[in-house]
Image: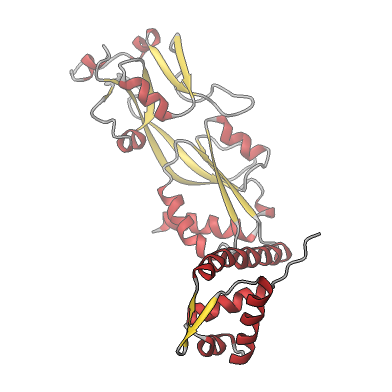
Length: 299
């Protein structure tokens, strides 16, 4: 079994000498005597057989070898700090990881704003964000496989949700699709006419998908994994698809897609709710993140 020749404290002292510009300054910062720091660095160099510092005048300078070793030592001390922080988190009940499941239609700007505020207080906790589609988010609520869930539409019974915002959908086709010719007229398109067109749909990520949301009456369907894939197909003049308007706006495809002028369901709205599947077991990190998310909607 390998036994280290150097210690974390020796590397920490070397970093301080470099960062503060000398032994005297580092001694003040670490509340140690200059001679003890000098001895620690000298012993480290002797043990490794590598000269790390050169003293010119009253200031210590890194050698080329010292620059390489210093960079690697910073990773070492950072890893130790994170390891000890993790142990403290576990002891205090702070989570090592927070899982956030989001309905893929959810505009994530406010979530990202909350995460920016969360990061300085995160105490090393990792955050995993996973997109789900349709009943996939409901499944994450029911099986308790996420700490926070952004779900679109109806919330599963027994799980209270907090309403956040509505997401607007419209039906789109490519500018070269025959349906596009009708889009610019005052004559609305009867929605039943779409039953004979190719519909592009986004696959439900649930293990037991339920076709309970949206309009799915077209005789021909192509199923894709993301709205971005659907947009790429529409750009080619193939099929139509209901897409959140904010996704179209951010896709740089606005000039290549046409919103269909439908007689019904032209503007569908889906309400996004934030659900905590296990509120009595929500850890301090997830609680903080939840509160920061809700604050985004109070501003």
